[in-house]
Image (tube, rainbow, N blue to C red; front, top):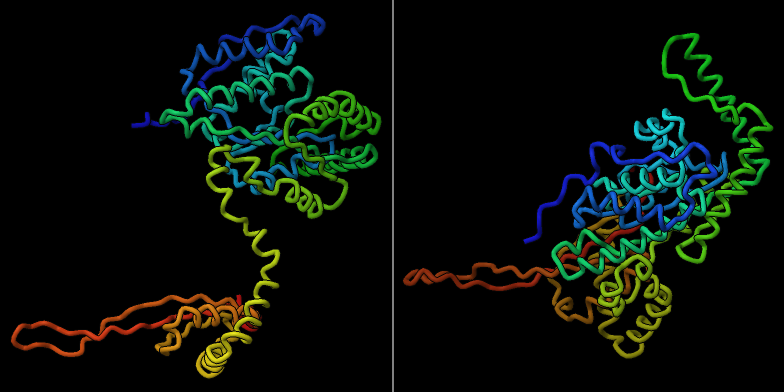
Length: 411
């Protein structure tokens, strides 16, 4: 029996063992392996190994200021069927743990960022996947991420032949970069600043609502340009280094929101060979993809209809006649709804080939027909001496026909 699921692997307090680095950034530890080992060792001391369950899918969302990360995060979560909130690293840096470090006069460096992100990823809400907004931002954080994914794979191998296997799934990493050029970035930052300033002015005047954060970079063109260049010089390079390791999606975010969403959907189109465990994929790969089947579906339908006409013309004509006499009058009466159901006891439908012809004929005419065969026992006579009832078995074929109905009085 598999052990009960943990409600959450996230600890109540994460700062008790955090050692703040010196305030001087030049003295901060820059060795990714040392940082990762320190963070991982702390996690192993605090949790049982079987509770180190991270997100199956990691979507690393990056982009220049004004690229629309905040706007598109909800759409990306929905596109991947994730119900969790996004992990905004800048918000984690405002957590009590990070504030404590800053209050001591120290910097929140790579060591602290990695620790905060890893702990957040242990929250149960992220088991299926997580969108990380703003991670990784440095080369050290990139290497720590790679080490985390490697450790997740090791845990999967360790628990693969145990009941806990379901909690240690094949990790998938997507790097998604929303790109805008410098002029667009600066323009959007300043527009955002104007909207926030107008909102806050209204709140102060009316005393209703909440004040929003006013960023200096959203008010000063020079500061906005500097922020964009810092992104290109630091974060952009870090994200580019992941290009050869994980699924990398470069999204043109210059256009309208709808256009950007379409670009995102194209990039995140599901591919089972990339996301499934190899053993699971091998079990399924013999079954053809729907996209492969439909490529030549029309040509195959034409060939079948021509074959019916050439080699089974009598049966073919009888099926066509049945459809015209018995089915089409019902279909016409349901033109507004776009769905019609017909029950038939016609003996021609006892022939499986006739049923196949019926479906193909409707398909050629633009309908979608589904057949369902019912066998009904109808009492025929009763033996009064024994009480045995003799039934007559008959077959009823129910055909459901769907098509594009009229827009009149619909919806």
